[in-house]
Length: 103
Image (cartoon, rainbow, N blue to C red; front, side):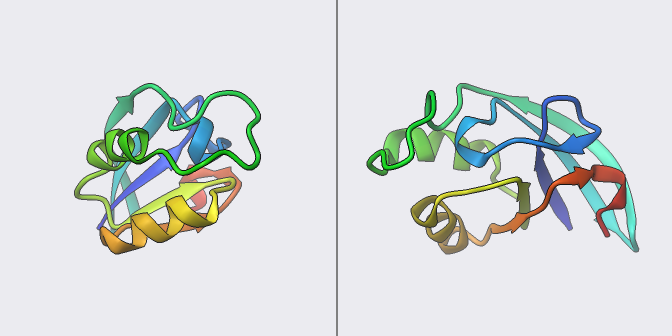
């Protein structure tokens, strides 16, 4: 399985989906993680906007970059982006901590 982790350092999941500018991509097979790469992009949203409208073009930019992943690990994600990711076959997982502990 291919997963993405919203992280500033590639060691911990420590970013909100909307403000993440880096997603580390891993393969997860038999409980073993192997880093496959890193995607750097403009974040889905900017600043601390709690009730901002859903931005389809910004979401498509991020979801395209995560294409092929079955899960994305984030500290937090809004209801609409989570729903839209699920429609694409990407399950958002709320998690904060070391990437190496993901199984």
